[in-house]
Amino acid sequence: MSATRTPAADPTPPPTPRVTFLVHNRVRLALHHLRDGEGRSLLLLHGLGDRSPARVPDWASGWPGPVHALDFTGHGASTLPAGGGYSAELLLADADAALAELGEVTVLGRGLGAYIALQLAGARAAHVKGAVLCDGPGLAGGAIGPTSQSFVTLPPRSGPPDPYALLELSRDLRPPDYATLFVRLALDGSGLDEPISVAAVVRPPWLAAVADEVGVTTATIADALAAYAAV
Amino acid sequence: MADPDPSPATPGAYPGVVEPEREYRIDAGGVQIAVHEWGSESADPLFCVHGGFDFARTYDVFAPKLAEAGWRVIAWDQRGHGDSEHAALYSWDGDLRDAMAVMDSVTDRPAPVIGHSKGGSLMIQLADAQPFRFSHLVNLDGIPYKRRIPDASEHERTRMAASEITGWLDHRRRTATAERKPGTLEELARRRGRMNPRLSFEWLCHLVSVGAFEREDGWRWKIDPSMRFGGFGPWRPEWTITRLPGLPMPFLGILGREQEEMGWGTLPHHVYPYLPPGGRCEVLDDVGHFVHIEQPDLVAGMVLEFLAARS
Image (cartoon, rainbow over all chains, first blue to last red; front, side):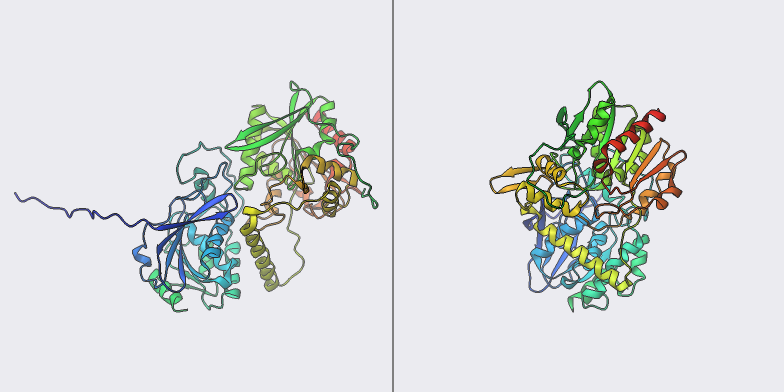
């Protein structure tokens, strides 16, 4: 009987990325520097309940410049605040803190991070050279109008992610015409013909509306990053 | 009601003001919420909810009138306001959970709730989501209808939105070190008077004396400097009014006819089609957004009559 040998696990753990802590109001935000380099930075925004990757993901490896990843409030190595109170707009301000640190960026978001990447591309259009919107946790978000959802108090949790982040950011309202406002802002202020690239396969209502807007293209992650790297 | 030539005020001297009889803090999911009570602790509870950029002590004249009529009146400072803790995060849901924590700390039975402005809007949503908490709901000029945006082209609206969003983000970049602007007690009262032109200078001085703190360089409002009037997001004011028709508890709305900057701009004919069965909406002529401050006796009388008639 011959024994089946499985390849030994890679004994070398991924290198621990350098982290800068940014201050956003009373929250310390962890900005992970995954790769140094020359040129414009790529900023990665994670999905709901997730955290920044420990190294540059394969799907972003084609980016020629530095790569950074932000832990949102209540996630990863960032502060877990008491009492909840999350909104997508609060996370937009988290991402804006990273933008203030990095200067001009291209941004790639997964899931909830895709929605925030869209908002950042519109809100700071002159400083964001392209946003890539990808599938990931929290992509759909909540309803597109008022709901009958009730309110609950959650027990505290010692580590990330914050349960209130999971609760509140999984049901934040995302009316399509609110999402498309950020496309128009990006188109007006970025200087790009197509400042938004949709790489997501799944299209919740807000993203379907975004994908139909002028200035939005559909592309693979690799193609979208290559196009924005060339800008 | 505004005094065109105000004289320096004496803190705490405003006629009709009664200090709360009990003041304490509760823990609302890790955020310390300051609670203020008037009336006997053994009386039936009645909750008062303040508006945005206000605080519980804005009920210093109104609440004692209800307490005098036999109610235990409980008001609290929303997170970041008044004597409550400055939180890391602020949201509508957070405010509603804090309200639930205060209510749960007082009673497990339905109680009357009065809400002014944002507090009224918050309570419409809580009454819709958790009606078991409410025996009656009184709304004091707190029914949002539609955002007051001037006639503008689509391009102009986009430009206005851009300005609003970048202004808010610029503000967020400064909040870690932000402080409220200091001044004398009278200066803070005059500043507030620009937002509340119908309220008397003496009342505004009283508000400063309880809603601000004094340091060597002057008085500052207690409200968290990270909070900012206005803002943006997906929520639409008209979504609140659509919750009104289904409210199962007795409902009384009291609107001020005179429109003010801190009000919603809601007019009576906006509200009437949405009233719940048996609900009432009264309109006070020559009264602004702060109906309970401009006319405390009249409004307290209307509330007490409503509570007595529908008990």
